[in-house]
Length: 108
Length: 118
Image 1 (cartoon, rainbow over the protein chains, first blue to last red):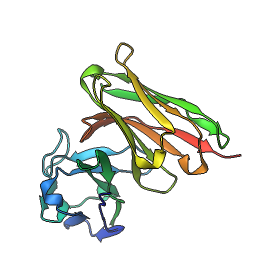
Image 2 (cartoon, chains in turn cyan, green):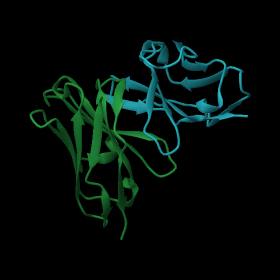
Image 3 (cartoon, one colour):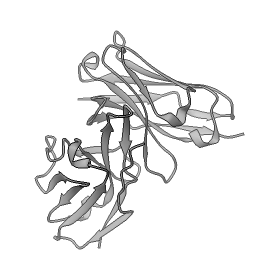
């Protein structure tokens, strides 16, 4: 089965740039979606199809996808960005949706 | 305003059954594939099942081993998950989510908690 690997945690100071990676075999050939989940809340889509943003999501959130790694980049990080972030892809070989294990973003 | 409201969760003994429901409003339900995602306490998101707009295509996570059945009623704007032979490891918050089977999941409910314990 297809596996997505995320670092358990990423820490960044306010105003700096956070990069959260999502590793998978040839993930560059798949569409990657990213979700933000704050404690006690449902997930929220922040980036879809590798690099597109839903309406209402700040431009500070961006994504890229190449080779074996997809990356969610959050620029000018704010305290309110502290949350868990999950990547997601559809594995067409198994017809299964796959989530990464999640990354806890801490704003120092 | 888009709303997805789950119901039907609760405490059930191992081996028991539950039927979860998700009531949708604020968007054209019949034009969206629908999905169930669960999250065990303190753990990450786990995809459970997906169903296409007309219900013709259905997908399940391997971990369910045929114990769960997804269905939808487009006339009533509702999504369901019949869960049988429940195990302790099925304990989780269950979210319904609207969006393409291959993602992204655009809309999420607030979830319903299922606890499997004797």
